[in-house]
Length: 289
Ligand code: G4P
Image (tube, rainbow, N blue to C red; front, side, top):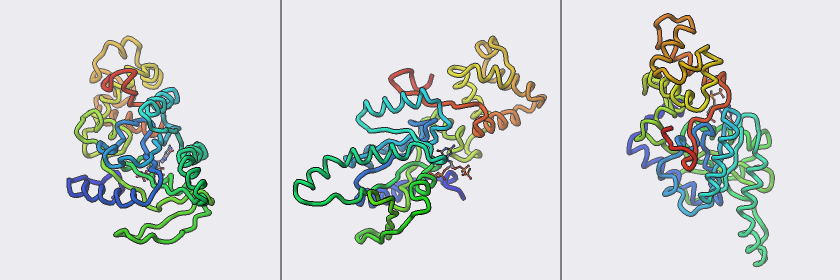
C-alpha cells in the first residue's frame, strides 16, 4: 500500500494530528510541503490550527511540473498572507539552498537574542509536514543525501524521533508528519485525483478527465488544440463531454472514451501536456474557474 492509497477515517485523522503535534514540539520550523500544481488542493484543511504559531515555510514542490508564472503568483499570494514561501523541485535538487536560506532568515532574530545572552547558535530543527504524495520522502532523501548521520533520539515523545543532520546548521526529523487532504470539496478531490495523489479507484476516470478538460480549456486551450488535434472552435464551443468524445476519436479509440480518459490523465501525469497549474490563487480568479 503506497501512501496515496491511505483511506482516512476520523480515527486516523486524530492519530495523524497527535503524531504531528508530538513532532511540532521538537522543531523550530515546519516545512509545509504542497504540490506546486495544486498548492491549495494539496493542503490539509486544518493546517493553520495544527501548526499554530510555530514558524512555517510553505514549500511548493514539483515546481518542474507546474506553470512557472502561476507558481510565482502562488508564492506572492502566500507571502501576502504572511507565510514565507519558496518553490522547489525535490526530485532534481532545485531550490533547496533557497529554502535553507529562508529557514536561516526566520531563525536569525532568535539567534541574535540568544547571542546577546551569550548562547551560541545551534542547529535549526526542522520537520516536513504534508498530505501524501507531495514529495515528503523525496525531500527528506534529497536534504540528507549521502552524508546522513543520525544524531540520536530525543526523550519525551512516545515514539523515538531520529534526527538527520544536514551540514552543521540543520537537523531534520527523519519521518515527516503525514496529514489528510481536504475531501469535502469535489473540485479538490478531482484535482488530487488528476495528479495521482488519491487512488484512481476512488473516482471515475472519465469524471477526472472531464474536470481536467474544463481546467485546460479555460487556461491552456492551445494544449488541447496541439496535442489532440481539436479545433479552436471545438475547444471553445463544445461541451467537455463532446471534447472527450472528439479526443477519443482523434486517439483512434473509436468510442472507447474510458480508455481515452485514462490516456489523457496518463499524458498529464507523465508531463506530456507541459507545465500546468490546476489551482489558481484566489485573489486573481475564482477557485472554480
Ligand atoms: P510523499 O512522501 O509525500 O508521499 O511523496 P514521495 O516523496 O513518495 O513522492 C511522491 C511522488 O512524487 C514520487 O513519484 C516522487 O518521485 C515524485 N516527486 C517528488 N518530488 C518531486 C519533484 O520535485 N518533481 C517531480 N517531478 N516529482 C517529484 P512516484 O511516481 O510515486 O515514484 P517514483 O517515480 O519516484 O518511483
